[in-house]
Structures are given as C-alpha cells and as structure tokens.
Image (cartoon, rainbow over all chains, first blue to last red; front, side, top):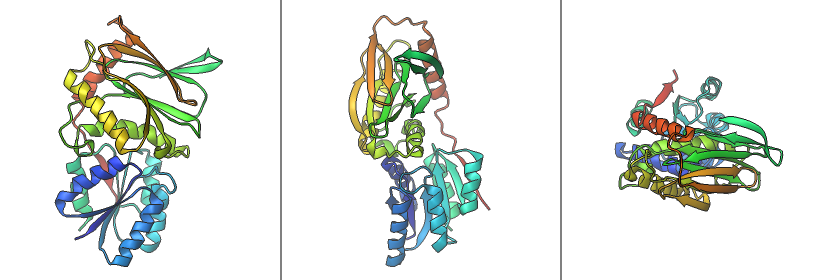
Length: 123
Length: 194
C-alpha cells in the first residue's frame, strides 16, 4: 500500500484530505508543518514504506510549503508533490513549479476532484 | 471594506461587509453588522495582530464531522483565508484566540436549519483547531452591531432589536447569502505541471 504524506497546519484540512483519499486504499501520514513533514518523510524512508505522494500547504509556521519542497527535492526527485493552498497568485504558483511541485490545487476543493488528481499523480 | 480615519482615540475604523475578511497588524477598530452570518474575530495577543471574517456556511451539515462535509468546506475556506494572513505575519493558529458572534434567526436571513448548522460548524471548527474561544454571542432573533479592536482582542456587541430591514447591511447580507447558496457547488481549481 502506498503512503500519502499530508502536510498542513490545519488539523481540519488534514482530516478532510485523509477522509477523501482513504477509500482509494492509500495509507495517510500527517504532519503539521514542513519541518515535521521532513521528519515524517525520513521515518517513512527508514521503515521502507513506499511514499506515493506528498500533499503540502504553503503558509505554515516553522517551515512553509515552498521551503519544504526545496528540502524534500534534495533527497527525493521523483515522488510527486501536490500543493494544496488558498494561495492563487501566479508568481507563487510559478515558484512552486520552479522548486519541484507537480501540481497546484486551490482551496476549497471538492473531495472527488482531489481523488481524481491523486490517482493521476500516483501511478 | 471601507476605511474612516480618526474614528476613536485617533484610530481608523475599517467597516467590513458580508463575505469579506480583514486582517491587520495596525491599531484600529473593525466594524460589521451581522444577521444570520457568522462573524469570527481572531487575534494573537502576543503579536498584537488580529482580523475579522464575516461569512456563512451555505447549507445544512450532515451527521459526520465538518472534515467530511462538503458544505463545510466553504466555512473552512473562509477561515483559512484569514488564518493564512496571521501565518504570513509570523503567527501560529495554535496561539490564536477567538470571539464569535452572529448566526441570528432573523427575518430575511437564513432558515433555522442553516443557522443551527453554522453554530455547530464554528464550535466544531474552533475545537478541532484548538483555537481558544474567549467569548461568544450566537443565535437570538436579532441582528448585531459589532466593533473589534484587533490589536487588543476587545470586542463590543450591540443588539439591534428594531433593525431597519431596509438598512444597507441587511440588503448586503441578503445578497451575499443568496449568492453563497447559488454558488455552493464547489468548482476545484487546479493545475498539473509537466
């Protein structure tokens, strides 16, 4: 079973994403900011879990989503990263693409649309 | 949103309208009038920053938690916009305090099932996010005039028992609620990169 790592400082958003993707048979791990996300990624690597996708917010305390992607890409160039955020400015989206994001979804999201995108990215 | 200079104590007043949110790191007053809508006042007492959101969850919630409810996404999104401004200024949602108002059963407002769902939504949201609730005044069959000082977290509420149904706020809130219900079907915007 592949794992999705969901990084968002909102427990409600993390729960919404987990609720949406659970039915498609993905294991979900959660983290509350980019720094914690890197720690969870490291422990997943150590345990031999197969990471299929990272879903990450942009505006978070301690480490934001853009910085997380930069750091994550130093160790993992291939696992897709979907940014899920309220940010819709073109410059921010370009920055996300430049640092290695695979897609950008703007909140609010319809659970069925999230599942469709997840299935596209996790092949 | 409109701004008036030198409202009280030499501070400006920002008036926000239904469907708007406002965040500031300045010393000021923020005002709105609420009927059926929720008004969320959020502040960080250490950073002395704060903001106000005026919105409605356009429908009735199901029996599961708000995280599993598509209609609740509208309320979550409205609050996320406000909280994102705190985080951009170095804030953390776990340090935020909340005061909540509105959700009145008023003539010309939302039906009681929607009002009840909004009250349930805001309580469950704040609990899930561990945002401390400092004061609340919800329900009742009247509108509320609200004044908030974001830098101190002080909030003042006046009930409007004989509110003029032709007032600007009443009309604007009705228009906003009608629009929120018309557009309650979420259209997800996303982009996949090569």
